Image 1 (cartoon, rainbow, N blue to C red):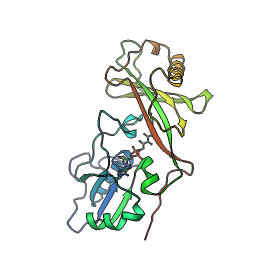
Image 2: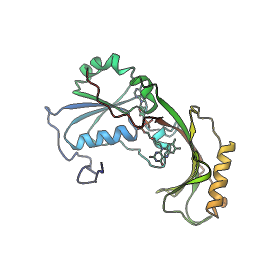
Image 3: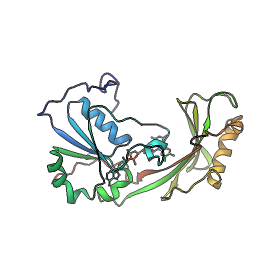
Image 4: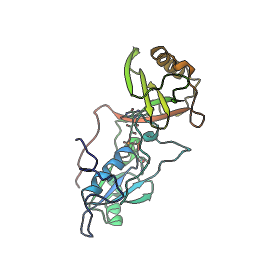
Length: 234
Ligand SMILES: Cc1cc2nc3c(=O)[nH]c(=O)nc-3n(C[C@H](O)[C@H](O)[C@H](O)COP(=O)(O)OP(=O)(O)OC[C@H]3O[C@@H](n4cnc5c(N)ncnc54)[C@H](O)[C@@H]3O)c2cc1C
């Protein structure tokens, strides 16, 4: 489904359709790209929304959705926000619904689906990105995103994505079932990644690392059967 600003989504601090006290109330679990996008859509369709999450965007410990090529930092206006860690929803659904007087719970917990939705098929795919200054001084400014698979393997690709804040993301890797965030700029797989992109885009070898945040890594939530979109009724 394609969503258009102004038509489907309000860019303002007021939803397109104002909720009334009688509007259904939805409890959204998860505060990253899928949870917040869904909260935004629900708000603009006139629902009352509470977003509950164990973690929020922060600059110390960056969450998966913050490290990706796309970026989402700001929660939509109009919802209520609650910080809490939840357990298996099968066990606590009734309690949560009663507590928040929610008509429905929608759950976007990423890897947390293992616990919250009892989904044992979810696993991490580790990714890493080198962040360099993209101001056109040390290499020709890159202003269009580009990803291509490399000859080496499908898990090690060329990924060049400019961010609007003069940063270029250099990637990418996809390490299945690797759940620890212990990669560094000196890890062999990261060095290979840089070399691959430098060979592809001459000049990149002169790039300066972003002094504030030179290396990003995160765990992509993944499952073989694709995204799980299911309605569970008692
Ligand atoms: C290096 C890297 C590069 C990437 N590049 C791209 C890209 O270019 N394009 C792309 O489409 N994707 C990319 N991805 C993948 C993308 O980042 C993820 O698919 C996406 O961020 C997942 O978002 P999400 O909202 O589903 O989950 P998450 O970001 O994992 O958020 C899960 C939310 O659930 C909450 N939560 C979890 N458990 C609980 C609990 N028990 N109780 C309460 N709250 C809980 C968490 O606090 C969090 O708010 C990349 C990922 C990485 C790591």
